[in-house]
Amino acid sequence: MLESDESGAQDFLPPPIKHEPVVKKWRNVRPKTRSRRRTNGLSAEQHFKTIGSREQVPLGSVVMARFSSQVALQDNPQGLQVFFSTYFEITMTKTTSRVFNFSAGPATLPKSVLEQIQSEMLSLPGAGSSVLEISHRSQEFDSVLDDAKSRIAQLTNLPETHEVLFLQGGSALQNVMMPMNFLTEKTQTADVIVTGAWGKKTAAEISRFGHLNIAWDGNDSNYNRVPDQSELNLTPNAAYCHLTSNETIHGVKYWDLPETGDVPLLVDKSSDLFSEPIDIARYGLIYACAQKNAGIAGVNVLILKKELLDRCDDRLPSYLDYSKHSKAGSRFNTPPTFAIYVTGLVCKWLQEEMGGLANISKFNQEKASLLYNVIDQSNGFYSGHAAKDSRSIMNVVFTLETEDLESQFLAEATDAGMSSLKGHRSLGGIRASVYNAMPIEGVESLVQFMTDFAQKNG
Image (cartoon, rainbow, N blue to C red; front, side):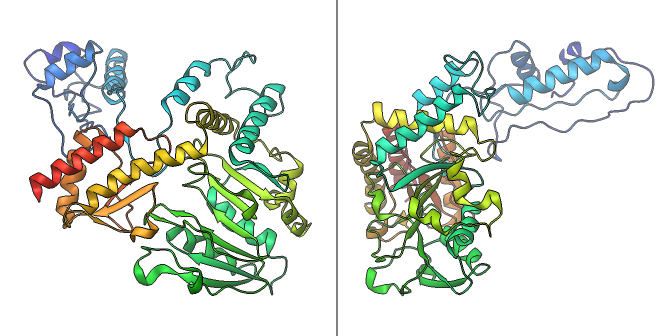
C-alpha cells in the first residue's frame, strides 16, 4: 500500500468521513524476497500509478502505503473496494520472467513439461475436464497412470521381477513402512549405511520394529564421503540393508553400490532417480520423492522387487502394507493424480527430448564438472564439501571464507537471476542443485558469476 501524501495519492482513496477511525495504520507490504530492497528510483506515488495501470512491478521493489487515519474501512464499501483491489495488485503483481532455480526440492521442471501442463490444464485431451478434476477410477486416469508406469519401465529397463508403485507420504513414510513390512520379527536386524542427514532419519525409525545395525556412519568426517566396501560392518542374513544414494544436504554420492550378497538393498534415490542408467535387478526397493528429478511434490515413485511382498501380512495396518498397494494398482486410496500425471510428462521429456538416461547422465556430468572446475581452480576462495571421489553431480555444495561473504554471494546471485542457492540450515554455505531439468545456460551463468565474484572479492 501507499504513503498518503499531498502529491495526488489521496485522489485514489475514498473521501474522508467524520467518525473515529477503525484502521489507523497499515503495515508495509513487502514481497518475500531479500531483506535489502530497492524502490528503483520511484516515489510511492509513481509506484501506485504503475500498479494502478497494471504495469509490471520490478522484482525486489518496495511498495509502501498508509491509509489516512480518517478512513474507516468497515463503514465505507468504496474504501474496502479500493483497499482490497490495491492490496492484491501490490502483493500479487510480480515479474513473470523465470530465474535459474537452483532449489534442492521442489526443483526446476523442464520448460516443455510446464508448457504442456499449461496447455492441458483446462481440459486433458479426450477427457473434457482438467486432470485436476477427473476421477482416479476413470478411463482417462487409467491412461495417465498406465503411461507413467510404462515410461518408467522403459527408461529403467524394468525386469519382470520388479513393479512400479506410486505412494504418498514422502521418504518420511517410507522410513516407517520399510521396517514395518520387512522386519517380520523383532529379532531381525536391518543394516543402515549412514552417509548424511537422510540416512540418519531412516535409521532413527528402525529400532521400533527390530534391531538396528549402523553398518557405517560418516559423522566423523561431517559426511563428506561414502565408505569403501572394506569399511562396512554388515550383518550376515540381515533383513535388508539401506542407504541413500545421493545426500542432498552434504552433496555426497554413492557411486558404486556395496555388495550385500542375498540381503536386499533398499535405496532412497529421491535426488538422483532418472539421472543415470540403473540396473534395477540389484535393488530390492527404490523409492524417490518426485519433486527433485521425477516431477512435483506429492508422489513417491517406488520400484519394488515382487518377492519382498511375501513378507507383508495381516499384522500390518492396511495403508502401511506394500502388498495392499500392489494389489490395488497404486489406487488403494485416491492417489495424487496430478503429481502422477506430471511424472509421466517428465519421463516423456527424458525419453523424447533428452534421449534416455545415458544421455541425461552425460549432460549432468557436464554441468557438474563446470561447477567443480571453478571450485577447484579458485585457490581456496571456494571450498567444496565432498571428497572428490564422492561428489554428487546433483547437489554441488561449497563454502566461502566467511558467512558475510556467503551472504554477499547469495544477495548478488539473486540480483543476477539465480535463486535458492543458500545451503541447508544444518550445514550452511552454498548449494547449487543441478538436477536433470537445470539447463546448461543456468550452470554457465552461475559459473560466470562465481568467477567474477572471486575476482572482485578474492
